[in-house]
Image (cartoon, rainbow, N blue to C red; front, side, top):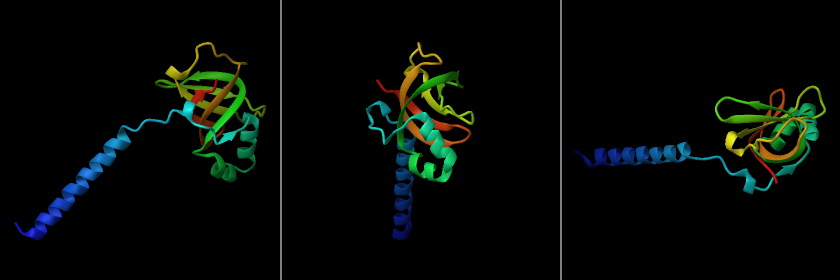
Length: 139
């Protein structure tokens, strides 16, 4: 074997191993525990929805990917597929609400519509409603 072939082969092996390591790290990555993270914004659901409805592009730039904490009134609780649960916080606007998604193990069983909760989650934007993911309850 020529030395050029050995160098190319060694480079390909190193590249493959590096890619495999990065892939394993990304595959095993877990969501951050937002109960220990300081919120980037503390805002009420009505104000957050109003900002998205008024100028979605500016609100997306400001809030998406950021941690948002809010206190609001539960309007409904929906059991999603798998282990996810969505809690809808009312905005007082018939056009939409704020939907907070969390997992079964993070939900308190005694929550019902009309309760006032403080929730922290990562904003992922607006479809018809403003969405917060990976939510936790704030005590």
